[in-house]
Picture 1 (cartoon, rainbow, N blue to C red):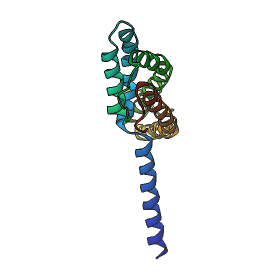
Picture 2 (cartoon, rainbow, N blue to C red; picture 1 turned 60 degrees about the vertical axis):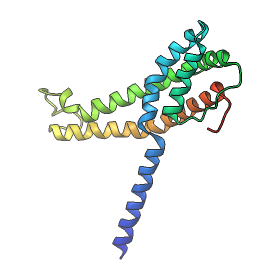
Picture 3 (tube, rainbow, N blue to C red; picture 1 turned 120 degrees about the vertical axis):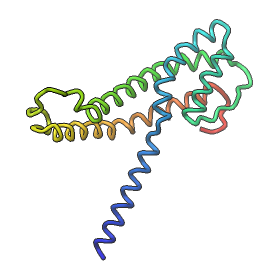
Picture 4 (tube, helix red, strand yellow; picture 1 turned 90 degrees about the horizontal axis):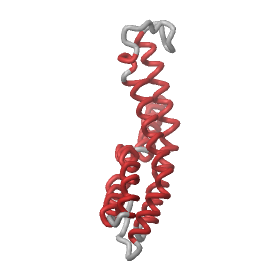
Length: 175
C-alpha cells in the first residue's frame, strides 16, 4: 500500500514538473526571440521614413501571435510608439536572441548531436567515457541541466518583452 502511494506521489510530482516546464517555455517564445530582433531593426528606420503603419503591424503582429500579448489598437501616437518600442526593446531583444541561440546550440551540440561532433575521435577521456554511449549520456545531462537553469531566466525575459510590447504598442487590454 505504501508503494502505491509513493508511486502516485511520484507521478503527481512529475506531472507538476511537466506543467511547470510548459508554463516556462513554449516554442513560440523561441520563435519570437529569433524573429523580434530583425523585425525591431527594420521597424525603427521604417517608422522614421514614414512607414509607421507597416512597422506597427509587424511589431504588434509578432507580439500578438507569438507572445499571446493582448494589444488593442492605439488611439493616437502610432509613429512615436513604434519608434520608442523599437529603441527600448532592442537591448532586450538582443539579449533574448543571444540567450536563445546559446541555449539551443548548447543543447543540440551537447545532447542531440554529440555523437556526430566526436565522430572518429577517441572519447575514452571525455566526460562519461570510455564509451561513446557514456560520453553521450554525460554531455546530454549537461545540456538538460543548462536548459533547466536557463529556462526560468528565459521566461522572465519573455514576460518583460510582452509587457513592453503591450505598454508601448497599444492601450492595454490585459497582459
